[in-house]
Amino acid sequence: MRQCIHCGFCLPTCPTYAVLGVEMDSPRGRIYQMQAVADGKLDISDDFIEHMYCCVGCRACETACPSGVQFGKLIEAAREQIQITSNGVAAEEGPQANEQTEYEETIVPTAMRKQNNLLANLLRQFFFGIMLPSRTVLSIVFGGLKVYQRSGLQKIVRRAGVLDAVNNLPTPFQGKLKLPEELMDAAGGDIITRPLAEVTPAIGIQRYRVGVISGCIMDQVFHDINEATIRVLAANGCEVITPRQQGCCGALHVHGGEADKGRSLARHNIDVFEHYNCDAIIINSAGCGSTLKEYDHLLRDDPQYAKKAQDFSARVKDISEFLMSIEPIQQMGEVQQTVAYHDACHLLHGQKIKQQPRQLLKSIPGIKIVDLAESDWCCGSAGVYNITNQKMAQELLERKMNNVEATGANIIATGNPGCMMQIAMGARQRGLQLEVMHPIQLLDTAYNQGGVYEQDNKDTVTKQTPKPVIAIATGLIIAGAFLLLRPRYNRTKDK
Image (cartoon, rainbow, N blue to C red):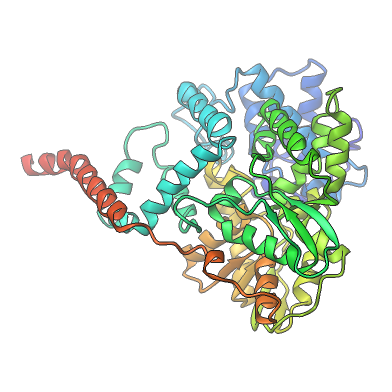
């Protein structure tokens, strides 16, 4: 904190300061508050909590800072202290619950308010403590989501007004349920995601042995990107190890103040990969990669794991970073597309990786790269920020989409699943004919076109939902809709 010289260079780079124009919602203002709490001059009050959780955690301020302030680590520490002090309550609402200003509505996390502490705690416990660490629970949750989407239930729910009715019910999340449903518009992959191969041999002469972090949300929603990553690595002479024992990297836990759970997950992943003696550990998700590279900081006070964490973090490489360091093979077919590249915050500002993804895209024949204005500006995804802080996230998305639309590109490439979902949602909201892809998917297509390998049916994640499942689920949703809407119908009839 004391590295901050209060110069203000960070202010123009801060998304929340740009929207609100409030010093307390700038990096400099937040550091003032952190220092005051550390010095015992300020309590961890409602206001302090709101300002800490209003931050998107994009770390653009780190790139701009002339003094090298590591703001990402500071905001994570502040949120961890909030969780410790507030008994796990992520954010609280002030005393005037029914008289919020527009400013308060913008900065306060919408799903975590004082009068709903119990529900918020239960939700946090399920999300951080049960769902993310468990591949089984993740598969059940996302399997249900995929059935909901592919069976036609989603269309029925929307057309019948069921979603609107549920969204308007006087629950703690009133008015806040439509966005998560819209955000997860098209989860890819099988209904129950099949495990990735534990060992994939290199194509041709083996040059490296690498591990792959498959992730949790990434593997459930973008399983095809993981498959493409493994194919591309194998094509470049890598034996690819994808241990099934690996778990969530802990990135969302650390960003959300649940650092203790994050440390537990970090220890588990270090233990899993320790046995494989990999030259590098590859990650294709920017947010996860940033945390994986900081396991050494996360476990710096753990005498048993501090050295192990240093060794682990030193071997973590983003997929574009790794490929550009080994001179990838150039046997590619043409991919005739106009592509704009969006810098994922935790890739650019967290990992300091800017040129490698662009170099990778430029190496693909046929691709026309067009500039995206403010490509380094946060899209508003920021882990789960777009769900907890919907108003602010939507304002950031609007700014991003104005620039995206101006490019005229038909593909936006970016290296983070959250950004992909957020920008894809923005494109749907505007009716844009725009595809959002990971750079590795475009390289994978070029290799396929160039004859490096051929994708068989097992590599395409297009398995259909079984018809009996569709029929049963459709029946249940119709029955549920009838029961929900019947009281409304009776009231109308009585009138």
